[in-house]
Image 1 (cartoon, rainbow, N blue to C red):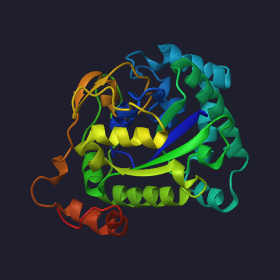
Image 2: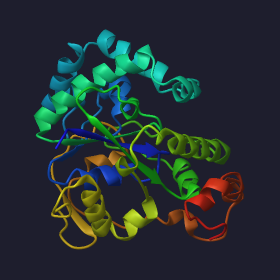
Image 3: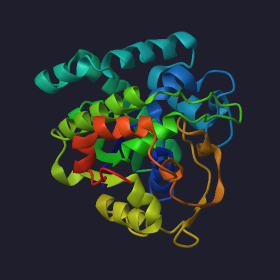
Length: 303
């Protein structure tokens, strides 16, 4: 089996940390978290890997970064961050779709190829999961040498996403996650998911899959078995204690929700806090602005 990168694409606050945790329990799979944050945030003071170590002290990350770019110095990290910022940016999206990958895409692909290769060796994995969620990952355009790109499009009801973005999330010494209003979240949710629809074009149909957070949370064990079948991996649900409880061992997620630090037996329940009571003004705004794609993904017009 060739080495593969599973790119999780979509909008933030859609359950990608839960998905990372579950996929990381599958034999031969290693979840990396929101890898795009590695260069800007990973080596800042106090920022932790899911293993509990500071990223700067984690031998997996510090070693892999040295393998990829030769150093963990601020200048070396900033150079990759600047390159990534030129590639993972909205003005670049139409150019990439119209003309295909350019020099910056290929340069970032080379860096990521070296990083992924080192991580695959250090974590003894044939499948890596990068949940950066950028809708057009460079690897999908065949610029990451040595790895086959698979794309997993994760969606969640935009009203739940908007509610999550208005909550405080942080702790354990980790920076608080950004908060945004209903208008920003609605436009971003639509743009990211629409771009993910366009970005699936360079990927063979059998390497693309879309799932909903709500289905994942409703029956996590069955969903993980299904994803294992998609990836051609048997016994994908072996870490489940029962249908709703999964045993999380050591992991090396470098970015995502602070709950990535939680280990041990975790019971999975859908976060439905947003749906209690009558619809607020902001939820009605989100519902109106996201109606076309929301319907496509099977979310009703009212709760």
